[in-house]
Image 1 (cartoon, rainbow, N blue to C red):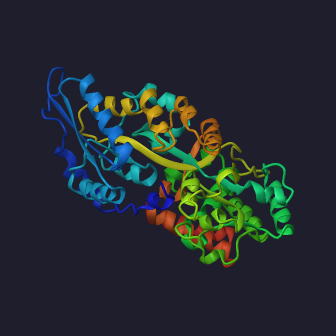
Image 2: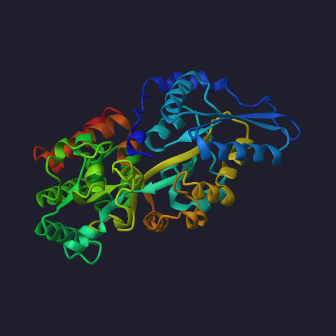
Length: 433
């Protein structure tokens, strides 16, 4: 899945109060006094609408019905963008399905405030424990509202042959290592890094990662709850970004470079061996395959390493930045809805999910079934991370995230400052209070 699909506008705002009122009478049950021996219907919307993925989800619905007599699952397999549009409309009319996909962050927080999504903290405690830190992006005030089923992290994808040509024998572990690699690549006549600053969010990922390295988890959690960015670590994140930009590591014309979609995009430059590396998520191998004539991307030259450590930061150097999708139940869904989404996170279901390359499974026991070695490496870092921080523009929602990203790009352009990123973010956050 491309990152662009995860940047849908979170157009809730004033509509939330209306949503809360409108949905108060909704239910997916045939009988509001649901219980043993009674018929129950669950409505389920998902976006695997073709091929093996659709067949797999149909099979799972049949299996759950067989194991739970009286339960009927009405499946709607929708094209991704259609599903998002219909979900938005359904939330506003209170006619949302019993089971749907949540992406966490500010969007989930608004849904929780409007009473649209079920608190599953206690009912799904064992599954939540098995998922570990992956659930942090779907947690609001220490309560869990969704079970993430696919999640990746952002790191550096690189060309192994170009690294070897430049005499780089080990992947960078610190920012000093990265700067040394940049100089080595320049010395070999290779542009070091592509970035799609024209799309804003790929450039923003750098500041997000510097914030993870400079700020403690508690500081980030407090900012998410209180919308206050007063800790000095937020400015330090911008200072780290300015240091990186000063190394001039990026491709020619990076301010106008788009993220994906063409051979001239940031992903296309890496795929077509015009640059040596790019900071991107787990989607990158698949994107690159679509941008080369042989549909192989970098093929066997594909390498990956995590974002480097930043000296002096208060953040855990093993924390990762990422995002994904989760199964949620509507607040007025029958209780057995929670049983179904736990079933969707069971060992066997996640194993099948991995084997069909439908995404990157969140259950650690299923990750062994991811075949591509670089993706397996990425998964090991994700699974070992003390926590995975959701993309900040998703975490804070469209208004704050948009202001944040715009200010970050201004630092790439040389017209903004580290303090300017914090000021723009805080100003947008103040409007949300």
